[in-house]
Image 1 (cartoon, rainbow over the protein chains, first blue to last red):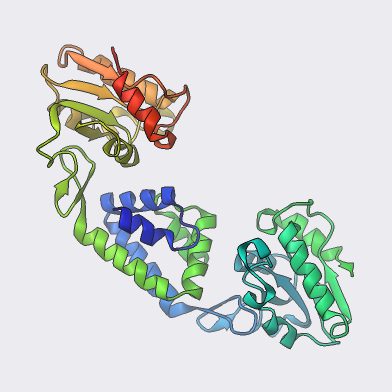
Image 2 (image 1 turned 60 degrees about the vertical axis):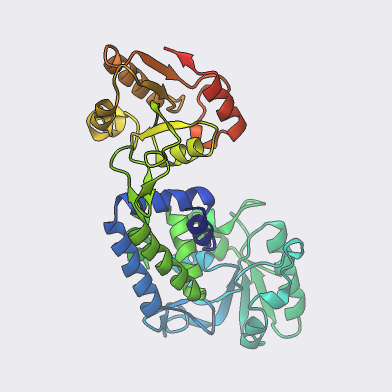
Amino acid sequence: MDKIVEELKKIDGVTKKSAEKIIFDLIINKDKIDILENILKDIKNIFNECETCFYFKENNLCTFCDNENRNRNIICVVSTKMDAIKIAESNYNGMIHVLNGEINLNKNIGPEKLKMTELFVRINKDIEMLLALNLTFEGEVTSNYIANKAKGICEKISRIARGIPLGGVLDYIDQETLNDAILNRKKL
Amino acid sequence: MDKIVEELKKIDGVTKKSAEKIIFDLIINKDKIDILENILKDIKNIFNECETCFYFKENNLCTFCDNENRNRNIICVVSTKMDAIKIAESNYNGMIHVLNGEINLNKNIGPEKLKMTELFVRINKDIEMLLALNLTFEGEVTSNYIANKAKGICEKISRIARGIPLGGVLDYIDQETLNDAILNRKKL
């Protein structure tokens, strides 16, 4: 049992407590094992990481990169795919770039561990870069790093601003506030 | 994506947020899908619910019922398998009975939805029943229900007492306090 709990904890979003709950639920309701097996099959077959923006692709199509109606002259930079979902559901109509994390020197996460090179390949003087990182210490460090490095390459760098409280985490912000913050973005 | 999140949420211990985290982790790290598939195979093949005490059986053996060294004259009643794990790891050396829940009339959970009949089949005048339910409203209601119904059948009914703070949830109590509470159980 302990071994299975440890194995299950290797997956993001699963704690010791939730692992135990999941396992016991599956022991009692074995039909849920089939549900989970089908989910795994779907994830294997249908979903992939987009190799341009690092959002996910469903049936090999990325909501952002493969949508011709989106504005290709603006790229919104976020730290996680969860944040990107929020952006996808907002009024924002441009491109996205998921860093897959934030700079955190305590946890030994430098820019080289993020999708940073992949970001700088995508920007140029015609593209606006909209930073939508968390307003936490790590988010600010990451924003500043990108803004500094992008000077000279990118002429328009902005960040979502109004409406997000200091210390706030993007993933928990309501959609209206987020729309507001995108609309009122501030040029850096 | 939304469909998969909804499916995954059907499993106990999985919230919308953790479902998203799990799915994205599996999309990025497809090797973890294999880990999860093996876990599901193990749960299918190795684990079952014990039909006597409703704890789990590993390779068809129950830690409580199939251990000859345990005292069969005392049955500890808990609401969940997670609580039973805590009891199994404590100094307690008797039997267990998992109710698979607590009486909660707001959620329409009456005694008939719990493993109550199965409990009363197991008790008689020679057996001590040790109630180890949560000290919450629902836990107290369940305890009182059992204590009342067992009068006349069971002569020794006790409850773990000292050390557990009022409103406390058994699953989060440290092992030492729990040992204390078992040692200082109070006859009802």
